[in-house]
Image (cartoon, rainbow, N blue to C red; front, side, top):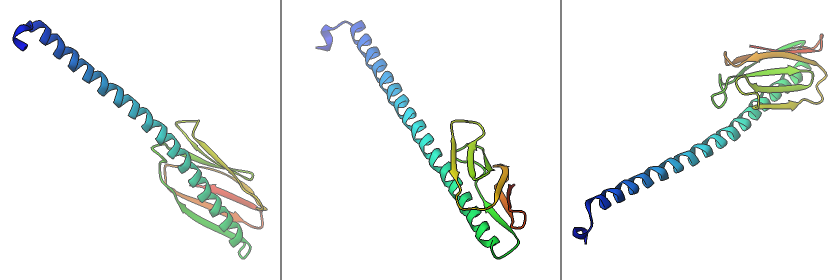
Length: 145
């Protein structure tokens, strides 16, 4: 059967077959790349929320310890990056905000209730070590790197 065909038909068939294979590989790669990006974004949001929750628990711990001492210092260890994004942690009156410095859409915030202290401070993720200072007499809690 191959003897009756011309050589050009066989070459054209093979070229089209190889071209179709390349197109399928490119389509599959682009679909999975899109899925990876969506999954990474979702995971990043959850990790930002976890960091905010960790800071919230440290604030509660400092406040409760401050009932027995006039001043308290709480040390926290946090990653330098979350999902490959550097970030900032901002404490403003009754609100914790964790925000990526390179992507404004990655932001998580948590409210703090029943803390009778003024919260302030902003820390950048470069160091990985953070301190929370609470002065009961002044009624102020400060967050620094």
